[in-house]
Image (cartoon, rainbow, N blue to C red; front, top):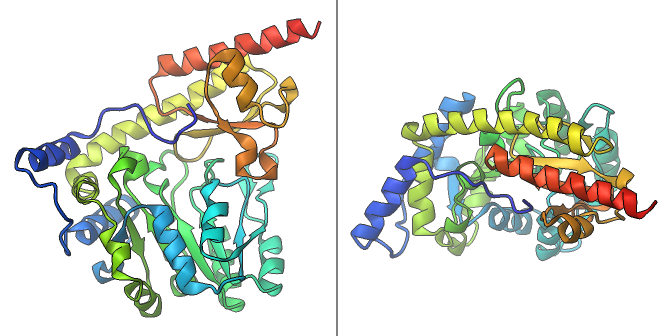
Length: 361
C-alpha cells in the first residue's frame, strides 16, 4: 500500500481505446496532434469551470518530466527552488536534476490541517529563490490549497520575479466539501507567473502509459513552453495519449464520479479503522486523492516506521522520512483499494502494535 496507484478496473472508454489500438496494430509513434489538448480543455471546463486555450496546452511523458523541463527553462543552475515538505520525494530529485538547489519551506501545521507558510516563502524569495514548486492538491497530506493561499502565493512570486510550477496531478481526485482551484485560475498574477503540469494518470491509473500535460495562461509563459525541445513532447507514449483522451472524455465522467464516492468512503473508513486498531495514530481526513499521511510516532517504531511495519505486519507503506524531515515517525498509506483490503491492512498493523507493546512488557 505504498505506491500511488489504485486497485480499480479501468474506465471502459480507456479499455476500449487501448483494445482497439492493439487489435489494429496501432503501436507506433504518437502523432503530432493526437487530440490531447482538446480533451483536456473539455475536461477542465466540465470539472472545474476552467476555460483553457488549447494553444497553451503541450504534452510530455509524465508530470515530473514536465516539471524538470520547466525548471531548466525558468531557473539557472545554482538557483534555489522552494518546496513545501513533507512533499512527494521526487520533488527533491527533480530540482537537483535541473541543476537547482532545494530550499525547504515546510507546510504549517494549523492543528486541524496544513497550509502554505507564506511568510517563509516570502523570506525565501527575498533571499533570492527563483521558483516555487507547488503541489496542489498536496502529496502526501491531501491538502487542497485555498484560493486565498494561491492568490497570496502568486502575488509574492509576481512581486519578487519568481515563477510557480504547480503539480496538479491529484486535482481530478478532489471531491466532497472542498473544491480544487487550478493555480492558473486563482488570479491574474497567478496566470502571469504560473505553469501547471497535470495528468490523468493518478485518477485513472495510467502512470505506466506515459502522458501528462503542461498548461499556461499567459502568452509569455506559453512561449517558454513552446521553446522547450521537441523531444519533450515526443516522450509521450501513444497508449498514454490514447488513454488520456479517453479518460478526459465525457464518457469517463461517470466512472470518475463513482471513484470519488468510493475514495470518500475509504478515507472515512480508514479513520474508523485507525481509531479501533491504532488509537495512538494521528490522521486527518485528506481533502483529495487516495493517500493518507499518518503519524505513528507514538508506537516507538523509530524514525522510519515503514520498515518495522513491513517486517512485523507484512504491510508495505511508504517511508515518511523520504518526504522530508517532517516525515519522521510517519507513513503514507494508499487507500485506493477495496474496503476489505483496507480492513485487513490496518488490522494487521494494529495486531503488530499490540505485539510490540507486549514485547516491551
